[in-house]
Amino acid sequence: MELKQVFANEIVKHSNELLTLLDVKKQIEIPKYNKQGDLAFPCFVLAKHVKENPANTAKKIAIKMKHPLFEQVVANGPYLNCFLNKTVVSKNVMNTILQQGSRFGSLKIGNGENITIDFSSPNIAKPFSMGHLRSTVIGNSYANILEKCGYNPVRINHLGDWGTQFGKLIAAYYYWGDDEQIEVNPIQELLNLYVNFHKEANNDQSLETEARKWFLKLEKRDVKATKLWNWFKEESLKEFKKIYDLLDVYFDSYDGEAFYNDKMDETVNILKSKGLLTKSDGADVVRLDEHDLPPCLIKKSDGATLYATRDLTAAIYRYNKYQFAKSIYVVGHEQSLHFQQVFLVLKKLGLNWAGNMQHLPFGFILKDGKKMSTRKGKVVLLEKVLEEAVMLAAEKIKDRNPNLENQSEIAKDVGIGAVIFHDLKTDRQHNVEFSLEEMLRFEGATGPYIQYTHARACSILRKSEKVMAGNIIGLEEENSWSVIKQLYNFPFNIQHCLDQGKPSILASYLLDLCREFNKYYANQQILTEDEQQEQRIALVHCTAVVIKEGLRLLGIKAPEQM
Ligand code: ARG
Image (cartoon, rainbow, N blue to C red; front, top):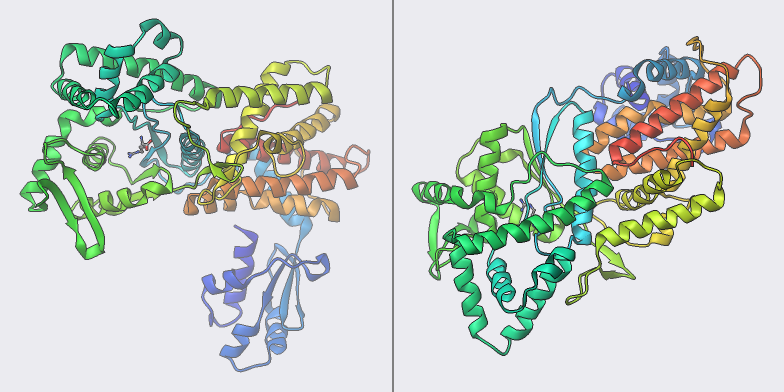
């Protein structure tokens, strides 16, 4: 059990249950100075309940507090200071980690239930944007965390592969398209066509008409139009898959917007039969006045369906297919209104699972304080950004450790890991400032810093010939104590991450663990041969296990040397 939880339980027990467990937990503090113990509880609120001096309350409770994990609990003025039993706690946590290995921290919350998680979902024939990068790394990590908590995550890439823009693209292709160039550089060429279309359409109205005709043909499954659309899609997917390979991300489904083309009539019919559709300027909408929200657009006056119609259909399809316990969408916060509307319409349909939908929104990626967007026709290819990160990592590694084997492999792990960590360490709701320089530093709050700490632990383990006999008696030294406490708290950070939908919690946790471990390493001769040597090596081993597993959950590799 979490140390804080144990302390809280005891306080509630010995204070006649005047406060709830939650209240007590909220008030528990981590003291600044070691001499104030490991946990502290201020008795002010509790004392008020019994109309007593807080110092008296503290004294009364302190003498009753006994637990195998506590060394002692003392009253310090109005505070209860809890000193944990270092030997018992460290023995306990090290044994658990040695037994469980990478399974340490796994939680049995999910019982194998499905949770669909819609993430990445880029738009074909367009560059993979920085926003899609955020969705990809946050979604991937959260899916890993769901799995760690006992759920079965279903990873869905809801490709943006339908819409009037494909009519424009086909029209443009017939005017200016060049097959060879498209094959060499698909995303750039398709984007050029698209940009060109808009430039020319300003002077030439007939282009828009032509584009509409092509889209109509596409919707009617015209052979020529469909063939082109398929080709654009394949070329785009090839590009996207390069990025997914670099990031080592996979999906269980690539069913995108087009997949729902033949399934939307049914959705519209259900909405109609439930009397939810109303006309507004010729369009069919579901009104959401009672929620003070604009109506959800279902069908345009020309009969075309919309983004929301597809998402409603997709939600129903996913429920029927996966019977999800929860359905999650990792999409930028600019789409919050859209998801609010879609979720409310599902509720109005009376679907009993409609309360299990969740939008996990995130902020923008900024460069020099500005939104990083694809300037007209100028593509910042994400693949190039990632390759640059790997190159920079390779240079740094070569400088630091010229004789290292497998340098290119390690540079890839470090470069890509740096990009992922830089994103995930920021609370997803906040914007992220993009800086390769910053993210590739080997010290400070970076991915390389964590990977380096892990590699350092591995190197100590390589040097310690002594194989652990498994005789864990615990550690008493003050130096190791902060590391032990961090290790103990790993499972609770995972749970917290799950509850908040925030991989950043795990990222901060790993930074704290690494800082404590590096302090330990600086202050303690780990390999000195004395009676605690084996215990210290076990601690290094446990730390390496937890860092590696934490990084894995974030989607980052942990090389053993760097
Ligand atoms: N393709 C969309 C975009 O780039 C994101 C799709 C998110 N998923 C969804 N089911 N709407 O904006």
